[in-house]
Image (cartoon, rainbow, N blue to C red; front, side, top):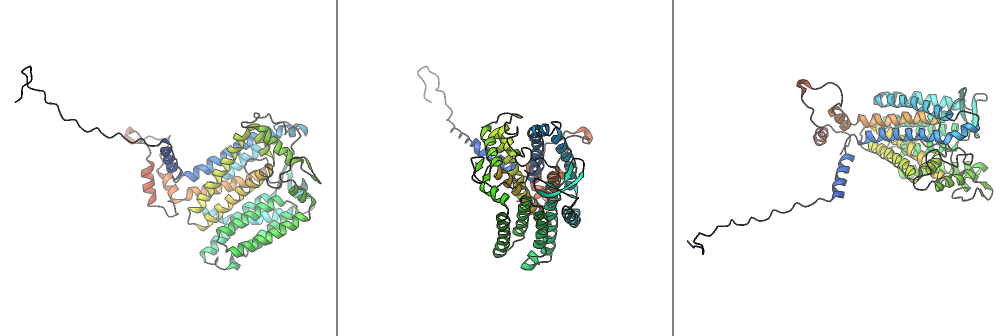
Length: 451
């Protein structure tokens, strides 16, 4: 054995272990994307988006109605909160309708289709009777309920067409009749044209455009052939051109697209241009809530059709983008509900409601931005108007009911533990919810296309 110079045996050094490989750092953006994708794919995502998005839009709309309508109310020798109180009352009633619709079974929704359609047609015909119908801003589409309360039956015609059209197409699909073009069109298109005719008798082309969009949405969801779809679209476009050409007011609105001066030739584009002024003066974060200048008599219909312009002036680009994002989330959730169900009625009704809300929001915002002609339609859930708010909130309740009725969503709701209430026997501590376990259990019960 070798000996060191000191006479001691040399120290035996242990062999070096290979260094453990350093853990690869995961990209934080990739990790965030993965978590967001998992959360986005949960069974209750559509349910929470519809419920949360609609409530946020309604609450923000109440705030903006109060801000935008104060000057108009004072100019009419009314209390400053006059329009806000009426809108708040409509929102409370609409909330009750939303809750009722969200708790109704699908069979009850289908049973209500024909009564709602009959009631809407009756009221829309009643509007044309002298002494009963009222004219507001040149449109004969209102019925007085006494005092300052009025109702616009054409708004309920949208809900009637969605429910009745969805029930009709679902029954024909069950009987395998939609492959024949006559069953695809009759009686859906004639009844839709009946509603359109009653609306156009009063001169409200904006509501007629939304109703036409709902009709095309239902036909597209039913799988209408391209030639059939193009044929119906050509007829509707021809009628629209005729109605625009024969009305100087509609021609003037068409000429105001992209106008930058209040007086553009023969057309008076005061409202369209001042809507652009309001948006342009808002900047990034706006002038502050209640600090709009355009609502002091410069911008007509500031709390109804052009409330989006006041929102841009007071809340800026951040506020308008927030409203746009809420509508985009609501539209995505509606498409998700319609695409992941195997119930034909749910698919048609969810698609019809989504088409209705999305098309109306696009037309309203496009008019305020100067990209589309002013159609006189309110921003859904946001603008002032109880007649528009009530059926829209009921329609949102339909989407919530459909989102809850999905098999995977039902399983998720049944597995969800209550945050408050009775404690478990033995005082055991509640374990945290495991979404992965829930998703594995829900996968066995999915029949609606949930991925």
